[in-house]
Length: 409
Image 1 (cartoon, one colour):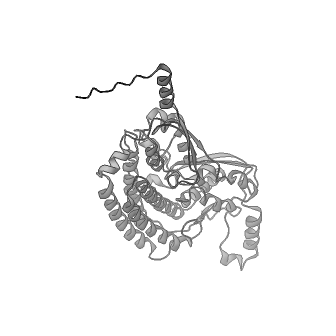
Image 2 (image 1 turned 90 degrees about the vertical axis):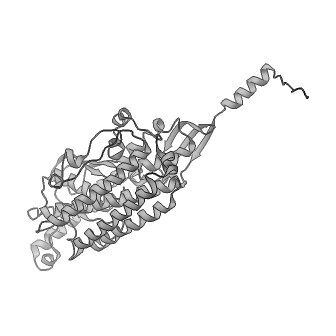
Image 3 (image 1 turned 180 degrees about the vertical axis):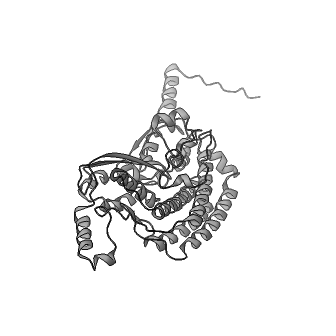
């Protein structure tokens, strides 16, 4: 019988092997990587398959929106808000308009407020559908993306009929909205809600108990309550830690206090929890949408007692000299917003979107700053990703549901 050969290593050889085993590698992920959901770069330090350090590099999409706002009238800045969270542009429009209206102490008509709620909740559903679809695709479930994208297209068709645009809607104005709901549009919304819920049920059947999806998301990217509060996370990324916080309930605006809906909360804080919350939020948004469709009040869609702020109807501009002058002054010099400072936050699909405005009584902001939830979410990556596998990063990024247009601005 052959005697096994025993190999003896010198001390120097052992030390070299230890150095090889402990050697770490610098790895750059992005900025042109499909799972970074935009031009985001992650500078990683990896030890084998384990990430030991993560440094997010942002700014590739920076356009200087905050500074641009200082050089245009309040209404001219509305299209720029579309391009922040471009997956829920109307939510951005409404949050910005509400901030300016708070500074001007301007109340919009009930029908205008209800239309804003309706379109914001449609935007929330659209954003979550796309977010869940690409999240599932990141972890290998291609069919889910096709399902959610189909349902999202229904909402885009409704937006096109209402606003004239599919993606960048620019639906609000200071003191109102641009267009009223066309005849029969509310009925189409209710039909779309029924079909979207069926699509959500199909998505859940494909994912919720799918072993591959569960293995890729459960226990991965766990956000603790302490971490969420320390970084100022909001939205789903906060509610997945057990904190029941929703601005629509805590500080209602646009008449949200009139509608009956629940704020879903989980406690584990992992990627799987964030999937469950977004799914349930779609159902709660549709619940709100149906209530708005049934109770939409009649009346005007713009404020009637703010001649220095709201543009007059075109029909009167063409036939009355006073309205013509009013239209010219607001268009060229901007609405007369009182001097002062204001901060307003709205509950967007990705968290709390805030606008700080400093006015000197002119037709444009003297200073404007945006508090984007995506920036806050990405700031947690240096603590959230280390200790995970490299293959976990797409699942973590997808579950955070950020958008670079809002982060970089």
